[in-house]
Image 1 (tube, helix red, strand yellow):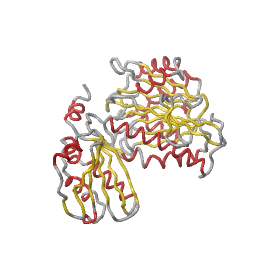
Image 2 (cartoon, one colour):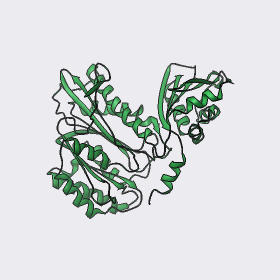
Image 3 (cartoon, one colour):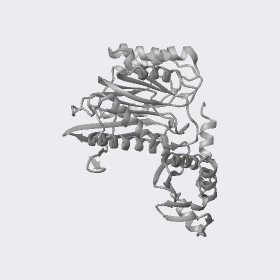
Image 4 (cartoon, helix red, strand yellow):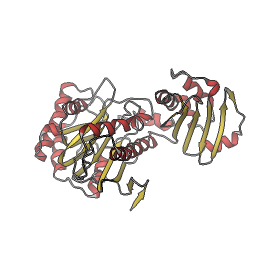
Length: 415
């Protein structure tokens, strides 16, 4: 059963990473974790064009170094192997050799080139992989690849760490009369911070598109989705976003910036934004989903700085957890961001399903009903609306509150 987003984009209710033509997936328990699924493979029957963005952390895990070597050389990708429960980070030459072993094992099991296999890992930093268990798991998983619902759901589950639910989305569009499908899955709950927002994110599409246009579409959507979320201001060592396009939809090739390209890019943006927001909604210990919009700002770059400053402020995050209408923390975070603006032009509001309340305007506090403010902030989804009154640009980002449970989860992460 489908829901229509607009006349061009159709959202598929039963989302799965294998919905685009030619993709298969699997998720199994290989023994890295005690019980839960911990190993996944995404496979394309045809070698696919690949675009990827990696964490900006200077400390990059060996699997990312392997993947970057592939994308730097514009290799076509046919399989992605993902393990959870162990990040294979800060593990030196042994860690790189283990990542390479994972690629070689998958390549042999699938009958493809090792340079067409990406490898990603997520979990605890500074522990060596149980590589013998993983090798056996890869061989087992390769034999169980399927495009059915169970395999797709198992794949989405197997990439999770502290996530409380799997994140997945599928949309359909038509390019010159041919159906094109885009699907995505993601993991992410903690160590989430922009540039890029740290996660593992995998998108598949059967679109017939050039590498140049795929890069252009993917990287333009990232700035307004993955790079506009934050949970805790921590940028991880492992995380990346990747899209594969295997051209099996048989649509006329998307090779220039035209209406068909814009249609594809808009659909891709829906996918990346949906996954990004789901990651924030699943923020470790989160009780509030925060959406911050800065409007009428002089330019988008300044808007991004201001939004991120508000969403990353621990004082703002704890105020929202306590349902305290402490708007001063918002203005203070903006002022400390490094962005230059006139506070006497700024307006700040809170909004939720219970209503909207004006807190600050033209350099002065606005009297408000504390009981009504508490009602507004008692909702799970809270909007912070900031009007700069200085320009025409608008930027939106997403974050969550900071709770007791966040501390507990991360204090006990290795156990």
